[in-house]
Length: 174
Image 1 (spheres, rainbow, N blue to C red):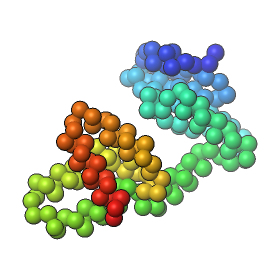
Image 2 (image 1 turned 90 degrees about the vertical axis):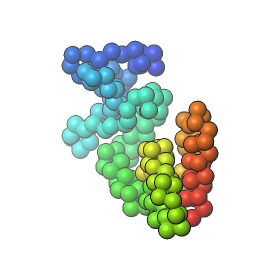
Image 3 (image 1 turned 120 degrees about the vertical axis):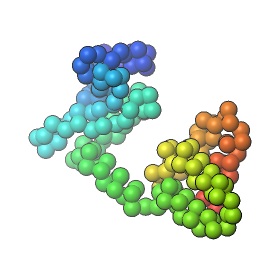
Image 4 (image 1 turned 135 degrees about the vertical axis):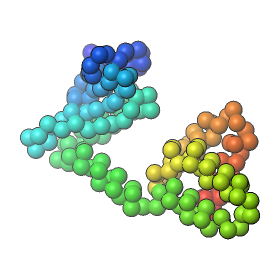
């Protein structure tokens, strides 16, 4: 039986880790502490392999299924999805990611700021509100919805939201 969002959301932690199967090797691994992890079990070159697809609820059922289909497509092309994921991550690290560019921008701007508190607030807001969400992404791959998502999380803090928006804009203007 295929999984539903309701089944996943209501799945309790057990005394031991267990799995909820969606089919085709896709399953949700649930830990005793309540962690829920999407995984895909497959065979490649005669070896049993497991590919991590993300953490629920950050990766919802629909997205996990799409990632599962993408991995199956790679297998159909005789490409190991795990190795493909590793190569992609390595390539992303070599590109200029947002955090690297933002820190370069900060280092460039820092001498112009006379107030230590302001300098600390600038980098602190980026570290607290921005880097966890888009810090590791290549600057060229960041789309407006990702920034809107960050700003929406700050809807109850209008002043912080405005400053975060200004700082993100300044980094992109660099």
